[in-house]
Image (cartoon, rainbow, N blue to C red; front, side, top):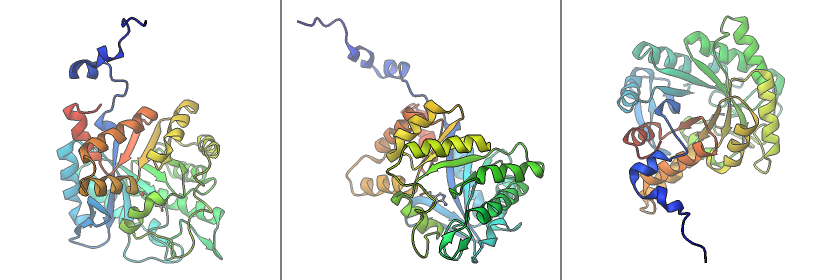
Length: 328
Ligand code: PBG
């Protein structure tokens, strides 16, 4: 008969002991909060598809800054909703474009806030695709030139870091070259290295008005049957000069977060996307789960898989949970 000398439960006997032996440590410093900036004035509206998240016109961004500060969140990633769109998404690189306005406003209100920008065209093109169309196909090489221009315009407006989310080939190299040639050698690139053509982006596309008007994104975003291909995408981005590799979405892709952490020496970011957030919100509202508990558990699982950075709509609530010691 097995004598009970070995008892894993021994280390679970008190909250203090469980905290002592936690394997996953999280800091609020590793959280990035996605923010939607809308062209116009006096706009501060809750986003129906993302309860608890808001559309802010630049003059209302002080509300976001106040909320972030109250929770100790110091990093945001900006998405822009322009008034006008066109075929080539020219609003994306306009000097007075909405993201550029948003960056300046946040830096004016809170210079210490770390501002990352999403570099993409889908919110700015009339057709909702992430690049320049050639017939019905997104033309890779024309698009990466524009992406580099967008990234530069963000850096010029004061962005601390740029994050291309388009999934064109060669865009990291094109952006690096453009930033360097213009004196922004120290603006890092966090590449959405492995970004899947995911159904989990549904609520975001409502929030950002960026659903494609025809077809889907499968000719540029990845097929979710593939995992090895994600490592190839990461490898290429490393070679092109990415500073941080991101896996997106997070929860259904933890195998890739794990592999990315094992294989590469760059910091790994994971994006817990809109559908992940909305599912937790909706199920909790239906009384089926404990929102706080599921939020904590799912975030910790992403870090446990290997994420160093988490981009999440729950940034403020998670920062509180970490500070209270419930996680982290
Ligand atoms: C832009 C972009 C998207 C997301 C981040 N950047 C949407 C898309 O690719 O369709 C999704 C984020 C989320 O769902 O929270 N290309």
